Image 1 (cartoon, rainbow, N blue to C red):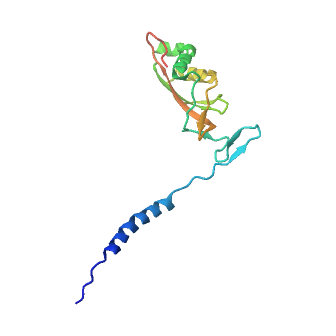
Image 2: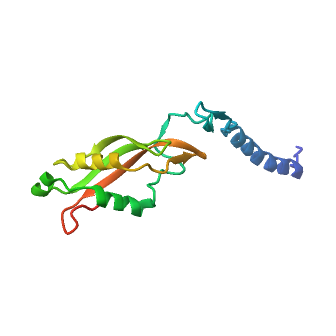
Image 3: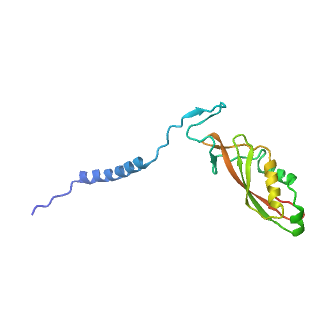
Length: 164
């Protein structure tokens, strides 16, 4: 009987071929992004062709910001929220959750209640959000976009009647 010895070059080429095959599979399964073509809108604004101009984003790279940051936001709420008399009399405390859109121009629109506590607190929270000055709009891939925001507003009785 004749036995054949395995050639060391055959083993090394097999060791090279397996990782290369794996890399080829990964390479061809990747989803390459399209070329980001720019378009000019009727109002002269330059945007990406890949981003729908009226689309509302829930998550963006750069979230909208209240002018002056969170400290200014809390101050705005403290200065403008009024604890509803009915809620005060009934001893109602809790958190009202709202959703609204920060449009490309920074304006606040479509304020809606997600979860309320009643006794006038829900309406008061909506009123104050609608009264909000323009925000610094959010951005996605470097483009200003419409963004849906969710905020909690806390009503608590105590030394400070309203805590937001």
